[in-house]
Amino acid sequence: MEMLLIVFMLGAGLVLAGVVYLLVAAANRRSGETSPGAGASPSIAGAILHAVARAGGASVEEAVRRARLHASGVPGGESRIDIRNWAERFAERSGRERREELLESAVHLAVEMHEAIPLAQYQALLDLSFGLGFHPDALARLRARYRFAWVDHSQNRPRSADRSSLIPFQNLDPSRRGELCAVLELRQEATKDEIVGAYRRLAGIHHPDRFHSATDEEQRRAGERFIAITDAYERLLMMERK
Image 1 (cartoon, helix red, strand yellow):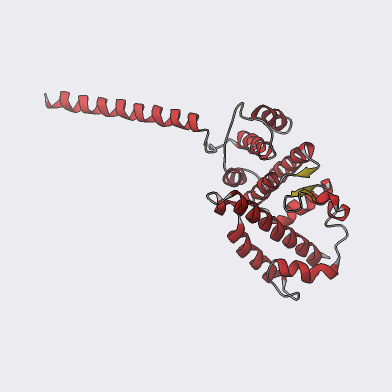
Image 2 (cartoon, rainbow, N blue to C red; image 1 turned 60 degrees about the horizontal axis):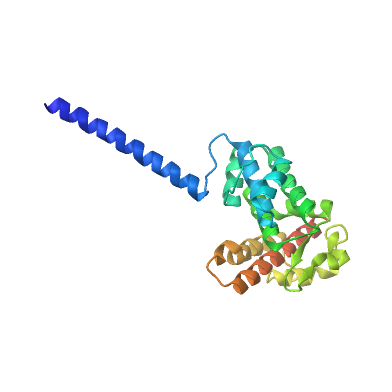
């Protein structure tokens, strides 16, 4: 009798575990908040590109179509992901060459969609670059190569209206160093280490992820501030290399 009771309890436990597993799997499918699986680099890349397209205003169907031009394993429907988290998982499974290819594919996709990239999509590219383990100058070099600008909502026009901004890193004006350092709250004579430190501090304060519950206006201002300090940082690093 005691043995039968033990067998019954074990069986009931297995059934309960199976039910819980099915419920959790179903909840994950409904929410779309998926997590990257082990050994799934192609599908991770596809989902990231899908998310970059969505950040640029593409419909679900258009995002799928555009992402499939650059990667395999693209989800067929909506897929809401944390780009930086997924990029970090991709970086764990991939060498530098594949990470560079993914970042360039994302930039290429964005440039195909817009002459002046929307702020939300540029933030997605920044998160991807950081998640892949690159410094902002990796994205800066791609900006120079593809000659893209991002939309400055505070001016209600694309930065491409200023033609000089389309080639931001080929003709850097050293006289702007003081202005750029001021954006990072530094003196003009700041060292490279001070520039890097200031950027990391300010990026942590103004990153859009910290403003999810803020008003639309506060989110807009934080996003523009985040882009401004990143732009200043990129330019100052490129000046340091000259």
